[in-house]
Amino acid sequence: MRDYLLTLCVTAAVTYLLTGPVRKFAIAAGAMPEIRARDVHREPTPRLGGIAMFFGLCAGLLVADHLQNLNSVFELSNEPRALLSGAALIWLIGVLDDKFEIDALIKLGGQMIAAGVMVMQGLTILWLPIPGVGTVALTQWQGTLLTVALVVITINAVNFVDGLDGLASGMVCIASAAFFLYAYRIWFSYGIEAAAPATLFAAILMGMCLGFLPHNMHPARIFMGDSGSMLIGLILAASAISITGQVDPDALKIFEGSTRQATHAALPVFIPLLLPLTIIAIPVADLVLAIVRRTWNGQSPFAADRGHLHHRLLEIGHSHSRAVLIMYFWSALIAFGTLAYSVHSASMWSVLVIVVLSAIGLVLLLLPRFTPRAPRWAESFVPPRYRRRKAAPAAGRPSPAPDGEGAEGEPERVPVPAGVNGATALGARSALHDRRKAGTRG
Image (tube, rainbow, N blue to C red; front, side, top):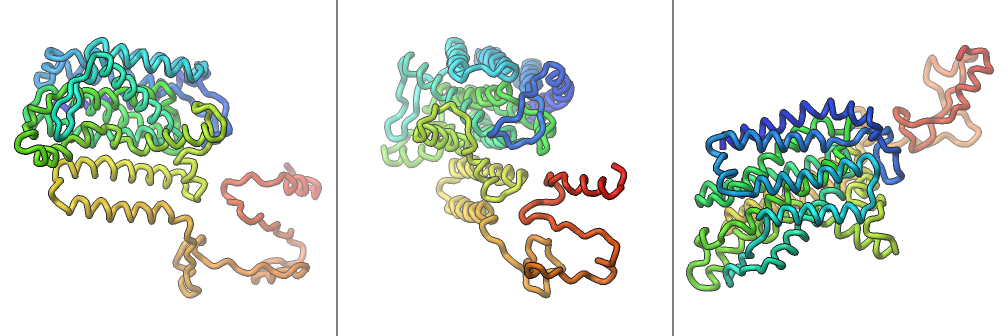
């Protein structure tokens, strides 16, 4: 565990320290696209944050290669080199897209090629463990197609959810933390060395996200862009492929006894293995809903819009930070809930806790739909948004002014239009024009 934590810390430090210079490089290179209709931010923000994340990945792999307890991962397996080659290819495609806006079909082809490069070097699904049946070996073509499909789905799921400051990096960090705990349990508790690469990939992915997140929190100083979102999506998929297709299920010794007993014993263990996308269930759900929505409206599945889950949270009334935290909550609930069930499937306490937390999450999700008002005697103790609105004065009748205000000779106060936040709204310019006509200096 100490070597994994050291690798995580080095990866996070390198990513964090390089993000600042990368931001200056992105500004100088002109990687600051104009604000689009679907964007939430209101100021041009540089991209290319994936450059710092990629060098963090390289630093993490380099440090792990020189650690005594992790050096065996590179000696006994070719998966780290397969991951690095596929990550380098997808990262280059993302960098070009952040600067020149590559066509969506070209990016899709690049994702398939990156997945094929990893398959050619041995990072592929060899078999599938099916409870009650056992290990089902896959042919070369079946394993290749399944691996490529999993990589492409995961990359695009992470890319689709990258719409708010800190959202993608935070959700992937939560997912990789849960996956790290699961893979470490397989490696340490069962003594299966084949799970070591997946554990290392998850630790490095956590470091990349943690190092980039301080620069990407709202208001973001830099975006990861496609060079970062596709990169972390590929690493997350590689971790799932490694532990699903390389770990021999028979080594876990759970297929003993009758078929019914083996199925019951294997179900919680293979939920994270057979369904690795549960750790990114929210991005995958967003991806599926986006494809269905755009196809139903007669648009291309790759056409951009403002119908994603985070956009809907903003439309409900959540602030930017609250929407991100809600997405964090649901991602952590699904990922760690699945992990808890796989460890203690016989206990009903884990299921009860998940149900209670889900109810709390639904209340927080729908909170803007309710506008509670405090009683009159408590209005001075609550924020203004919970106070009752005062009745507007009748037309043509001036509102009574407090003592010392509205005296003769003072300018008349112009009421702020309803629904406008005075701290952030850009009002009309007529007030400034009137003051200049009255003799005030501009």
